[in-house]
Length: 561
Image (tube, rainbow, N blue to C red; front, side, top):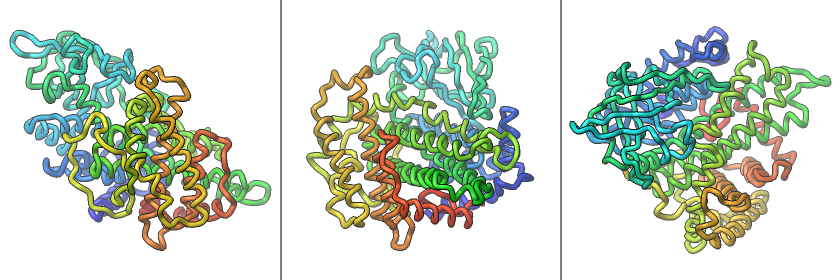
């Protein structure tokens, strides 16, 4: 990963110290731009100078994309300063992953050329009337006698629509409701004939205010038949496969929002004196900081395993994508909410050195529902659950070290090879029953045993489920089984990170793992087990040391500008 660290260091230097009030790409500039419902122009220019869009273009097409985990780590440098800037630019992954997955060589070259020229492509898949049910989308493409396609309908929520040079659009090409009813189209924005397309008003939002959300209503807009992305009728299948990447990558990038929220809270509580001592020394503050730090490490452990699995064992993508989206989004939003109670009245301030916190608290919310709602993630997991649990019980095995280790070589990224439904085992689930065979620290073993027992109970119940119980209208107790499965995967990821950590590294110590497994056991029981005092002490010592040294709070502990 040597290359990615040099690139992230370069990007950090270009964007500068976010705490510097005079930095036009810093926190103050991001907050000021947010008030105008924009992103900071200097930060946008810095990303263009860096050539950020090349991070989303495969190296074979002239870009820098080789590993999803590398791309995520670099994008955290953007998200930590301004999540709206991160999503606005990182959103280039959404349309282009469809092109890399299903496009012809000519379409891939065209998309690569646009991004490498700092231009933008946008994606129009969802429709407000149909929410997460993309197979019900009514935006239509009808074949004319001359082979052209004429578009009719509305797409209301399109990021950067007014600045896009090309679009990827999901359209109904068959009136039936079968699996081949929709197709993807890829065409230039120069085809948006004003006589046939009405631009819809921009959506205004509470969070991510700098993200430009527009829309269009088409009435007979003509695009060539060559705009089809992949074969006609394969649109939903391509979207489902592509979403495996984006539903892992975007929550993974968003861990940087918690990193900054935690950093701002630590900065505030260290400088504030209450009852004759720094606020950071108060028990409730210490507990909140330690728990947020543990939650961040849990999120990044799961995200590391899931992003690596896209290349190590891509058959599990349909399982890991909803798992990451459900669990990571929930942990991130809850952690920022708890930190806001520590910030007190400072949480509401829209000026001053801590003003960025209120922006982060608003911007983190869409992580839980953008692309797909957390509840829909459980619906995506449920039909796969009996088979996955059954395979894990029949053939438990340790997961590959490459999913967890700080440094690991990965197979080439094969986006066209992703499957819409898991065709094999989930290596994280299969590894959990084996962790007790390993040598575990004495403080960790009881917690690991608890998670293994919980997974065994889940397996017993889950394998007995029948198809009628797994539908979209599944009862709450059944849906909770899917939620417990996400916890099991996260526990397996944390245990794997600890097992592969280098001797002497913080991640090789048992304290953080005790904290991670304790926090995971409390996911469904918010008033569950508390962190032991000695564990809190160890986490806060590490947190303070990283803060003083300007290191990230996530797994990598890398230098920040």
